[in-house]
Length: 289
Image 1 (cartoon, rainbow, N blue to C red):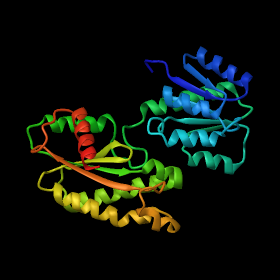
Image 2 (image 1 turned 45 degrees about the vertical axis):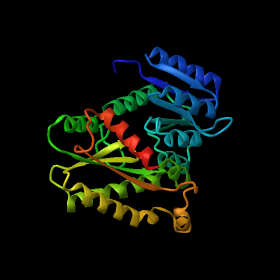
Image 3 (image 1 turned 135 degrees about the vertical axis):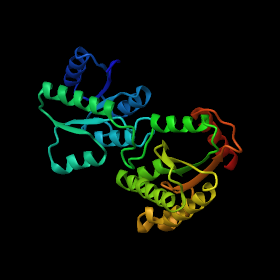
Image 4 (image 1 turned 120 degrees about the vertical axis):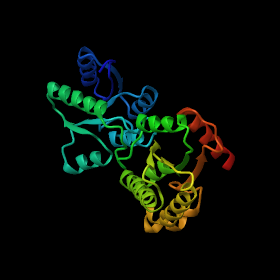
């Protein structure tokens, strides 16, 4: 790693916290620390560390809630978390794994073992492929490069931005597993629509976690948009538990999902780069609201 990796330690035992801070500083890391869960959430959002080492038992909110808030914030949702705890029960480990915790170390622990686990987690994060962890679709720089190449070409193009709005609230209400299932289901329906009505050269990826981008032919775009909107809207109620399906049409309900598809093509938009595309999509959504 060319720059210092930043580690956030959330631990209320002052002696252990100081030991970890000093140890990892000597190892060449930049270290932040917090003794309270709320403080840990705030500092993680402010400083975007590369890794969070998190105790489960804290004086205010517990480590599960800290991790939950990290995962439901768009800026911090992909930061790897290692639980550091005295809890050894299988149910506690399963709860951590459901929240996306990458490792689970029980006290007392070997400091050298912790060092190696931290190093390995950071290496995996650095070498991770640029694909979404849930859908396996391209994201990040892969999508940006694809879009920029299309915009700079002289070929006519069409684009569909498919946004599942409200996913963060849905995740808070129904959990990570159900929110991931929504993304997988939407991905499946988009791929099916592309297979039935698209072209061989079509591309689909993520602009962000809850927003897909489809690059296609101008002649195919209207039919694809209709198929995608119809299929997802027809399936939307099945994303919710049976008891809540009547409330899915109420926008004020926490966890309410809304599908927004924004079409764009080279005949109506003179764009030259990815940043310009994002600005144009935001503008059009504001006009639609």
